[in-house]
Length: 202
Image (cartoon, rainbow, N blue to C red; front, side):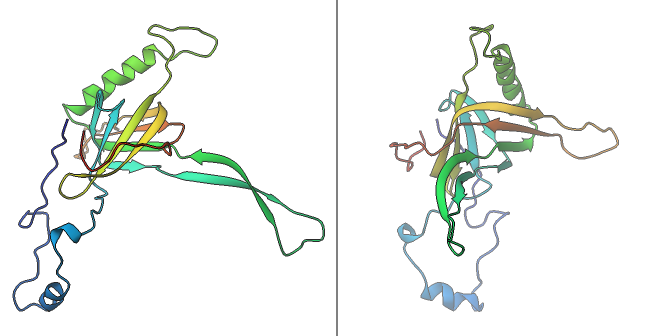
C-alpha cells in the first residue's frame, strides 16, 4: 500500500519561490549546488502516517503527533567521604504517552470509531480469562515519517499499544472552527530492532 502525499515540488502554491536571477542568493546557490542524490533526505514534521498491525487498520493522516520520547532513568548513589563525585546506576527505561490530533473527516473518523468499538468489546480486566472477543492485548502501532517526495525517512513501531483516551470536539453552534479529535496511546516502547529497510513504502 502506498500513501499519496501532496506535492511540494517547485511551483507549488505553498512553497516559497526560489531566488530570481540577479538576486543576492543566486551566487550562493550556484556555488553550493549539488547533485540531487547528495541532498539529505530530511523528514517533514507535517508528513506522517499512522497504522495498526502493519497497515491492516489504517488510521489515516494526522496533523499532530506528540510524545515520541524515551527517558533513561537512573539512580544516584552517594558514598561516604565522596562529596564531589556521584555514581549513577541504570534504572527504568520509560516511554512517553503518544497523542495524535487531527481534524475530523468523513473518511478517517468513522474508521477510528469502529476500531475503538472493537477495542471496547475486548477491554476486560485481568480477573477475566476472556471477554466478548478475547482479552485485549494491544497492537503494534506504526508511525511513518516521510520526506517531501513521499519516501519513508524512518518509522517508529509502538509495541503493544493500547488506547488511553479519545477526546472529541467541543461542539458550539456559535463557532466557525473545525471539529478536532485526539487519541492517546500507552505502549511498551519503540526501540525494538527492525531489520526491514525503510527506503521503500510497503
